[in-house]
Length: 318
Image 1: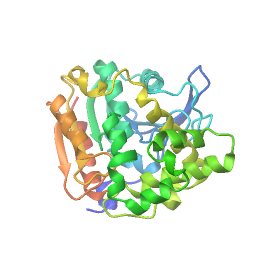
Image 2: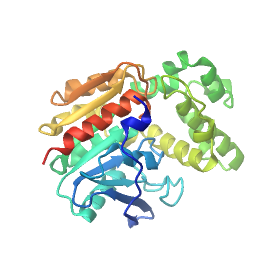
Image 3: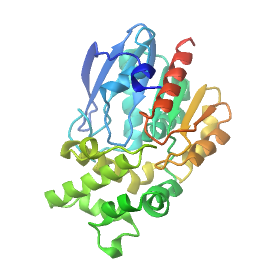
């Protein structure tokens, strides 16, 4: 199935705005689709990735009231690439303000990759506000997941891409890539900062699809890369600002009663399938769909089709 026949046609927002957080951030948000439809919030990845127009097309515009927003410091939100007052729990409260703003008692929460992390954090804190969860490419911020992608796992599948990531680091710093890049991304040398941001961003872009594509154009652009790398690294070095390593899985009992779908590519090299399996065991009410011929990206054709199928099915629920 191609992208063109998996998605709904392109649409434009009918309303946009900026949410003033009161602590230094302005959050860009947009609504599209049917203002009287079923409320849904789309959570982008990264953290630091921002929303794209194609994300609007995952939902039937006749049946959904679709809200998208750029999380703190990225996309069209300001200040750009800011790490101040930028934690998981700040984002969870931003979501609550946006829900109250549109007057929704409950809404569907849709998130992929880091968006799945944020969706779970929100749903475990505010389960009464979630009508359904649609999750893709599960990431729960456990140390084993960070180690897979930045230490001992994915590098074995992409040795030449890994070499490009770490070649700017001294040999002695390559055992802790997250900490070494943290110094570069937060240093005073602007060119070193941008070079580190580009390499960090491209590494993820190059490893996200089953059939590789050139990620340079989409991930190496300075404005995108700086926010993506700085914010993502900030969250990773702080372990998502969770109290304990497996917090999202340990507290999954709070999701009881929330219908959900977990969609994950068999050959996801960014977030291994084990993540989705562990979540499905902790949250047995959810339906786990393993997409055989797919990696991590939402734009994988079969993942995209499964996501639209899930939103179509949930559109029929009151």
